[in-house]
Structures are given as C-alpha cells and as structure tokens.
Length: 456
Image (cartoon, rainbow, N blue to C red; front, side, top):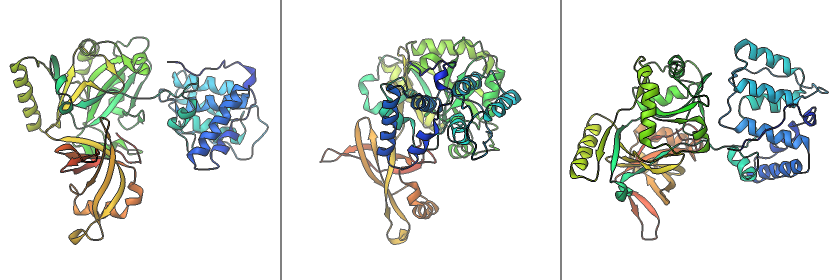
C-alpha cells in the first residue's frame, strides 16, 4: 500500500499555513464546492505550493482509518494568536510518535502542551486538533477526498473486511469441503493487535472505545504477535443485539461486562491493509488456534469460534449441514455461515463466505415515508426504502414489523431518519415485470446504525 510520506525535517513546511484550505472548504455545504477546493489544492501542490501539500498531507493523516493517535482530551489554542512558527514537520513527527505509542499518558499530554504554543490559533484549532481527533470538521469524508485524490499519493486507504454472500443465490458454490459456523447476532469487530497496542474497529473503520474489557483482555493475553501485527476478525455478542448497540454508542460509562468477543479469522496487519490475504481459510484457522487458543481459554470474554467440517459433494454432508442449520435456529442463532476452507480472505463481499438464514435479510436506505391510514392515521404506515443487493436494485415499502410506539416515534422523527440504513427481513427477492426488484413479505427488523449511511 502506497502511503503519503514527507521528510519531517524538510524546511519547506516550516511556517506554512494550512487552515486557509479548511476555511474555504467550510464556505459551502455543496459537495461540488468541496471537490473543487480539493482539486485546486491538488493542482497547487503539483505546482509546488507547500501550504497545499501540507493541507493534503494533513487530510491523509486525519482520514487514514489505520492511523489512531490515542488522545481523548485536546487542548485548544486561545483565539487571535498569530505570528507563530507553525512547525508542521515537528507536528507530523509528534503524530507518528502518538500513533506508534512512543508517547503515552502524561508524556503525550506534555508534548501537546509544548507544541501548541508554536502554532497560530487557526492552525491549531482548525487543523492540528481536528487531525488528532480524526475529523477536520469541514464537511468532507474519505469518499470526498478519494474522488479527487484517488490516483495520487494522498489517496485515503479504504477500510473494509470480508462479507458473505447469500447461499440461496449461489447453489453452484454449495459443493466441496466447507466449514460451518453458527451466525451470531452481534457487532462485527476487527481488532488490530500489535506488540504495543490493541485497537478495536467496526466493519466500516470506526474505532470502538466502548469495549475496554475486550481490548484489555487481548493486551493481557500476551499473544505471540509477529513484528508487523495481526488483525483478528470476529463478533462481539451481548445479551441482545439492541442492548449491545446501545452500549457500543454510549459516549461514556458503557456497560459491556459479560460481552464476549468470538474470533473467527486472523491475518497479518499488512495483509489486511492490502485488502487481501493469500493464506487459505484452513491455514488462517490453524494459525489462529496456534497463537490464541490457549490464551483465550484463560479469559471469560475471548473465544475462538467453533465450527464443523462437512463434505457437500456427498449426501451425508448435506444432511449434516441441514441438521446443523436446524439446530442453530432452534438454539436462537440467526442461521449459519458456510466457509470455503481453500479460499483466501478478500476485503469485499465474497462467495468464499456464504450465509444461510431461514429467511433472507437485506440492508436498505430509507428514502421516504408513507403515512398510515385507519388505526395508523397520523403515524407511520410504511418506510419506503431502496438499495442494491448482489447487483439487484431493490425498492420496497416496508409496512410491518413495527410496534405502535415505533410507528409514532418514527413518524414524528422521520426527517432525521432519512438515509438511515435498516435491516429488512423477507421471504425472498422478487423481480417485477419492468426488471426492477422488490421483496416478498418485507418486515422491519432494526436500524443498522445511528446516523445516515452508518452500518454496524
């Protein structure tokens, strides 16, 4: 993976101003305006503008999902302060020290208080502090940046993980030696584990701060970590999905005792960053068990996912899978996972992993609302949603699965719910005469996040 890098001793970046670009981005909420500003900065950087290069490098540092600076409370510079040195090379060196945990605790705090005095108010408050907190607060995202910078050294790495296809759509893949696991109803968590630190992420690259006992258990396990670090892929499960989601999003005092991290895959950190691990599923599982099994067994909150192996080229194998699936549903699980033991890990949706449920579920965006009639007058009748599943564009009115309280609350707050992602359960995907797709007997299950476009 190519990374944007600068010589931290390069004198060209001493004293340059980066905040002007942030102010220009914030002048309009228009996506087109923001893209034009980034395009202008890119052109200026190519022409040798040090302030444009510093701005773009700061964007890279802020939005790179693999960079974390571990600072919760940031000092603010007093407004109106100008004429300072603005030593960007020193600031970038501090970022690297924070990222690699060379400075932690009081030492990190002291370094921040020391360097803040060397920056103008706008440079610190509009650029430095937001970079450390991983959000420049000017209405841009990694998608906005990559639309312009995608083919340059400033391209923001994309955080993604392997996702499963629905097995009902892939009957030809249901053959050969497979590993079966129950499908957990929890929160997907990627744990980046190095010799110095453990960081937990959602499937979209958002850092999870609310599972400290999981992170601490991984740190205390003293795993035999290779120099480059590893990524553990798994799911945290609590008493219920809704209770788990509430705790995952609390800003403080999250009640996460009793939750368990079930790990089902592992790879090198460098492989995950590259988006592909060539080791087979079988090899990755053997590696996971070798490094983690004994250590995990000494904790209450870490487990390696159990599974069985079946041969789907035989009738006996299919019988085993059917019994396993039926038992999983009977025990309260969502369904089962079917994994190709000879396949690599791809950071995208792949039929190397397939899922089976007694019904199908799809995740769709809310695009509108329909007012109810009769007993549902003056409250929600249906949520109109759409999205793409396996290249099929689905649009459907979801009118069931809501409690009376849901119908009133969702209707009263409908403007704030637009573009949220919901999980919809249905019996099947159906094709309309005009070639579009819908769902048979769609039912609302739950929201997949708490913000527009968020999926956890």
